[in-house]
Image 1 (cartoon, helix red, strand yellow):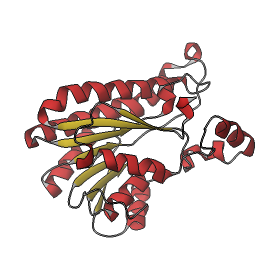
Image 2 (cartoon, helix red, strand yellow):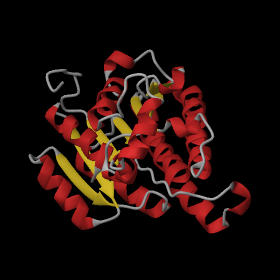
Image 3 (cartoon, helix red, strand yellow):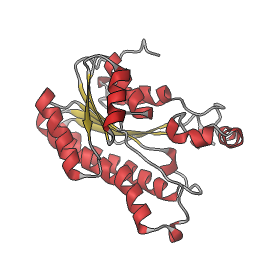
Length: 253
């Protein structure tokens, strides 16, 4: 898969949540592709480890909590000071906690999940759009989830947030099209990361999950990386407002 080229040499990317999991895989492949990447995360030690793992001079790390407006402003200020432009934003940060029914969900838990998955995506996309509009071009790609398409026990708040992310994607695509900015999302099913390890490492749960996936397995991080890079490339210039399902056929049955 590494032989696939997307023409991203020299492009400037921000990847939120780039210190681990899908975000780290995206950032790593972008550097391989010759892009200049700024990753963010909340923990400096995790960011330092990610930079060391990626290697090379193509990656910079900025500590930031994307649900805090001042952190988002500082993140993008750093990008502009270092690179002078922004070609693409990958909104990757996400978090999920098993939640009770909506009727039994505490406001604080609701807010925590919404802040990370929806509000942070809004703050980053808004700032990126304000940079890209004068440039007359750019790409915004958000990592959503098929949880935003189907009500699932214990994932209600997360699913609502991801459904909001997909509508945000469509609205931004409509509003930014005249500035030649394409806005899309990818929605994977379960991906083999530390985030989801409690599920895929349990043979019983794993077996139940793959029964609902026609391809007979869960996604690997690179299954998500390549659709993201495609949507961030010139090959996707006429695609906007779409959510690409990366689910092994799970939503087709």
